[in-house]
Length: 342
Image (cartoon, rainbow, N blue to C red; front, side, top):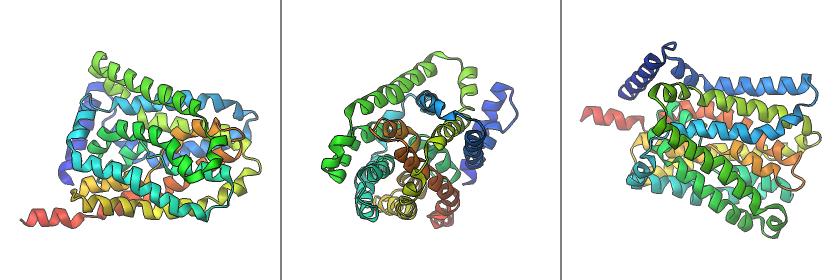
């Protein structure tokens, strides 16, 4: 832990020195990010209650997401895809948890929901998609191997977009045909994945070290901006959807409890070291609610129920992350003690 902490402090110090910025600014942003996100959501809610017409911000959600993902991908080393493939056991455990174990868990939780196809669609959209943005920073705070998780994010994103329609068809049956359209998935892949990823790679190759170091300070503020816009745009449209969305909260709470345990168990069965196993656990528990929101909004008759269902999961998850960064950090702690004794 001390070595990892020293390494992070060294990296942050070097970046700050290049920028001439306040020492530790990036470290402050990363360690305080849960409170930054809660503050952004509170500000968005206050704005929605005080200012009429904030629902007009809805078209800004997708561009803000694209910016956030660009900044996330910018932190990805150019050789990241190859690095992830070389870590075969980690990648196998990560993909196995997210695309086999978690869908099975979601299928077991689905009967707890009312038989409302739209409500079930919202829950499935958010729980079947692993997070690829702030999970990396939360994993680092929880003493997980964030480097491995960051390197695997493109694979997580590509596979969830490819497999999500299949899972929805399996779990929703005939109801999926009338609700899920291929167009929004293709558009989301192009504008939220392919374009930001290509721009990030181009920026890594062509931009100066000073520019890239400055951009490295922005992922947390960009995520906070997305949360602010989402809450401000969605809150005025909730109407009667709030009580209906609350029916999904027990499922979200059960998932928040069981998913990290499932991820940890699979990772340890794969004989991963504790930091890598924690990364798998964080990935299993943290979902892609922000990225799937444009998909939810594209569903016919989605507003106001689907946005309410997605935002409810975000609120539950952010509270759970505060627990994870303390609880998951302790799992496998004896491994390090045994290694030191040897």
